[in-house]
Amino acid sequence: MADASRDGVTPGSVYVYAPNKAAAIFFTVAFAATFFLHLWQSHRYKSFKVTGLLPFCGLLFVVGFAVRSYGAFNFTNVDVYIASIVLIYMSPPLLELSNYHILGRVLYYVPHLSPTHPGRVLATFGSLSALVEILNAIGVMYITNPKVPDKARDVGHRMMQIGLVLQILVVAAFYVLAGIFHRRCARDSIFSTSIKVRRPLVTLYISTSLILVRTIFRAVEHFGFEDAIRKAGAGETPAS
Image (cartoon, rainbow, N blue to C red; front, side, top):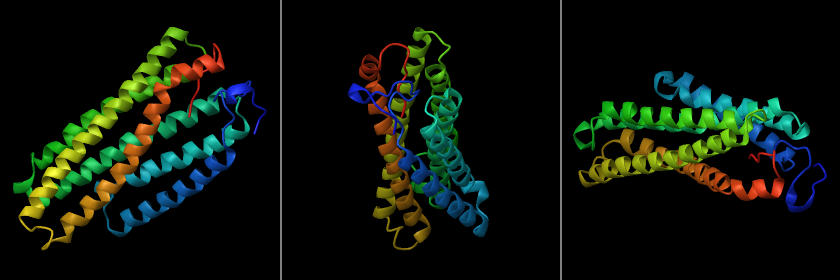
């Protein structure tokens, strides 16, 4: 860890604080394990058309946190910082998109109980996820580039905030859609006759909850941006 001044601000660090080296390495290894697990499962069950995004997102996380691990030891390197932020922020919306795709396939098993046409699930949520990705990409580009003016950096930060809030709302819509379908299946005793419906739903709930916790954490972090800026001083941009 680099020497930090008061309020935890590390002079010269593009992260403002000194990045945690052990955490970055741990998450690199952890996501590498999940990447290989999803890759093996997709290959074993020949499900790349449905679950192909899972190993892809795992790979993005592995590379992102590997770069972050390097950046933890070189926290003055802006290019490394930008690369790690972009890679890490790209994955969650894509993971959500994968969940929406899987939910759409589950709805096809019992289409008459689906709250909406199963084919519209991926198109609708995919469009919203694309919007979130665009907001995140432009926002990250602005807030991590030291050459842009402060006004543009503020705009980028606002775009990140909007993207995170929209992502939370999309997750809420997912819960509503899946919850209505779940209740209808329970009412008609579908779960007692088919494990192809209940197990994927439970897995989707767990996966989406993890993404939601991460998104809420990021949202709280970004909405506390102004206070961090005041502590860090002009010209510094805090990041996770």
